[in-house]
Amino acid sequence: MSLFDNRAADRGLAIALIGLAAFIASQALSLEVPFSYDPVGPRAFPIGLAILLSILSLVLLIRPGENGEWPSPWVAVKLLAVLGLLLLYALLFQRLGYLISSGLVIAALARLFSASWLKAVITGVLMAIGSYWLFTMGLGITLPGGSWFG
Image (cartoon, rainbow, N blue to C red; front, side, top):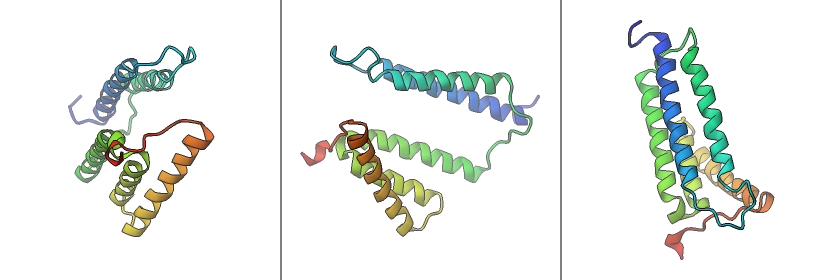
């Protein structure tokens, strides 16, 4: 088995996803939750996702696919750009607020995947407003307005 065979790509992805799941779980466990929250609280969703991601990653690690392929260099650059945008989103979320940070990142992601500038901006605006409405009106979740704007 060489380092670059088809199964190694799946196993490498599985190890990266297990690391991501551990990061998500550690961040969720570090959330400070007021005592008045119900027994489930806001930690349950990210911890549940981390557990599910870990289980699926273990399956991929133990039983990699026969036709797994390493991504081409261009696809790898795009994946790294997506990761960088998501990191930027996490850094700017509290400062710019949900609407602006989400709109910018969604537009950048759409542009990264070959949307025209007009389509990327329209997608960013509509998805940010729609998801804001869904979270605030549909689920009753308060989203940050942005500390840089007062």
